[in-house]
Image (cartoon, rainbow, N blue to C red; front, side):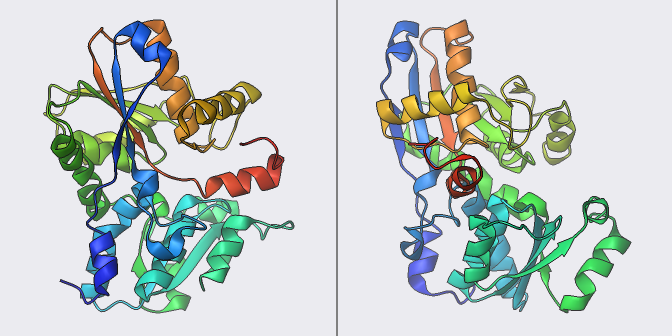
Length: 320
């Protein structure tokens, strides 16, 4: 086991709560719904600005172990200016004693950016590249040119999806099965790179259907997930119509719905991922997409640090 302070090791092995949700629409449809509160996977030092939490916590868990065991002192990764992943890697570096480097898509922002300000506060070195070069970052030659100036680094892909990340995400299913007396009939999850969804698909019993709500516009999510899952895993479906225009795009009805959901449940959502997931799930419930008696688990993947960037760009009064 890597030499990481004990309280941090303990935190990396905590279950997140599974909360039953009471709502008139669920009662009317004869459905049961639980929320897997991965947004509450927050280390003690992160209570004011939760970045290393949720699916980022799970994706980085075994990567951190692997990096420490390999003797790496630096973590290097890629992301946009408001990336949850950039914030999470920066926080993880501070918490676990790694130097961190972020290759950021685009030019430095002219106005205040809470995500990058947080990353710099954590000690992350930010290196900006233009968008055309950034799009080629996964090509070996281009990536080698990008990363060579920083010396020996443990490289994490954009969004954090790799085999070790999937290993961490699979643990969600073990937790849910431990916390529920019966297996759910459906698990619902948002998707950016598809890594969290792929880990869940791999670990879930075939009788449980996985419903995936992409935050991005387009029909490429199937291609993103398929290479990571066994051909025998057939019980998953992508629901594409709740992206609200694409990644980081939004419309007033989404924000209004999120605020009402918070008033009704006390659960905060982010407008990039979990807001679209919950909106889509309840829209499907209203459509009658679930059979009476269905037992549904919605994965709250965290991402709440994204609320600060959203409010900075569009107005602090939009989100409650």
